[in-house]
Each structure stands twice: as structure tokens, then as C-alpha cells.
Image 1 (spheres, rainbow, N blue to C red):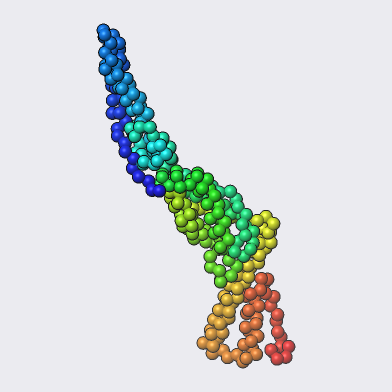
Image 2 (cartoon, helix red, strand yellow; image 1 turned 90 degrees about the vertical axis):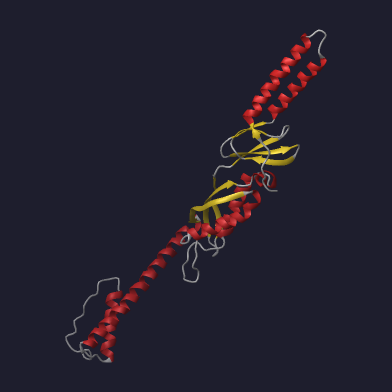
Length: 291
């Protein structure tokens, strides 16, 4: 079922006509009874005018800004009025109000296992609005509850696709480091699920992301260890470059070193650069081969 435009005319004009019908009907009935003999046709005309006035009043509906009125005629959907104002629609119809405002759904903090099987806590906010009032009213039981359930289901699904953090270079995308990419995929997944309810997803954002309390301490230690290893790797890489530069400078200045002295120099430089403590010099009063 798709939204379509309902027949409607200016409600103020309809109100004026209803008032004229009401006055005319009352006047016709009064004059009919006061006539001698009674004017039955005039009385009947007055009754008909009163019925027309009553029917006209039942067809009036008020549409507020950013709202829509879904019109049904004896159970049959005949259209939607989205323009705000006072309108006259088909008489004897039911009107159902649907909000077109942009709204937020803030999910609960969900406990999910990530791609590595670690329990994590995750939450998200979904910004949405209704774009098809017919689908939102008739294709789902309650579109707000539908959005809530599908949003939490999508968050669980996305969280299970990626690890919380990437501790190696094989897995490039993680929940913590790639929040924007994860939110974008969540938005696409939700849009495909909520299209049936006539709902447009405007934006999705992760509002909470953390390891579950039972593993938070262990994972913090793992993160610290990974950071230390990464820092050590960077230090070693820089130390190798500095040793290569030192040996090249010695060769350019004509200082020749045999293999053993070259190895000793490399060892000393690497130890002094890589060590996390200040190097302690050792003075050799003899030669390299005899101390």
C-alpha cells in the first residue's frame, strides 16, 4: 500500500456553507410551522438543510504542521491530507493522525558478542521520520514499536560482524576504530528493514561502546600490551635506521671496521638506543681482542 492524496477542499468555506445551511434549515422549519396551514415542503426542506449542515461538520478536519491525516471511508483507505490547515474531506470518514516530525530512538545498552566472541556493550541512536503514511498506518501494527525492535536487532547484527578492536593488520575494520563506517552500515541495514513501514532513516550514531565488565580489565591489559609492542617496534625500526646511518657515515669518512668491530658497534648502538634505561658506558683500557 502506497500513500496517495485525499480529496479535500478549503475547510473555512465548508464551515461557512455549513453555517448557512444551519441558519437556512432553522429558518425554514420555523416559517413552516408558523404558516397556516403548515407548509410541509418547507419543513422538509429545513430538515434536509440541517442534515446537510450536520454532514458538512463531520467532514471537517484540522491538520497541524508536520502532521498528516490518514482518511478511511468505511474501512477503505482513500488518501492522506498532509498540508496543514482546516480542510473538508469526504463525509463519514475516519481520520488517523500520523506525525511527520523528525524523531530519535535511543536504544538500550545491549550486550552482544563481537566477531571475536568477546562480550561488548553497545548502544545507538536512530534519527528517523515517516515518509509514507499509508505504510506506517496499515502495513505494520505500530510503526514506532517496529522501529524500536528493528533498530535493536540491527545493532546486534552489526556488532557481531566486527571485533571491538583490531589487534592485528588482518582485520582492518573494528567497532572502536571505525565508528563512522559501522554507523553507515547500520544506517543502510536499518533503511532496508524500515522501508516496509514507510520510515526514512536520516542518521545513525553509536552512543555507547565498551567491553562488558567481566572482561574489561583483561582487555585493558591487552590493549596496553599491544601499545607497548607497537611502540617497541617503532623504536627498533628507528634504531636500525640510525645504526645504518652511523655505519654509512664512517665508511664515507674512510674509517674501516672489520667484521667483529662492526658487529660490536652495531650491538652497542642497538642496546643504547633500544634500552628503556640509560646506557652505562664501559671503558676498555686494552684492545677489542685483549681487555
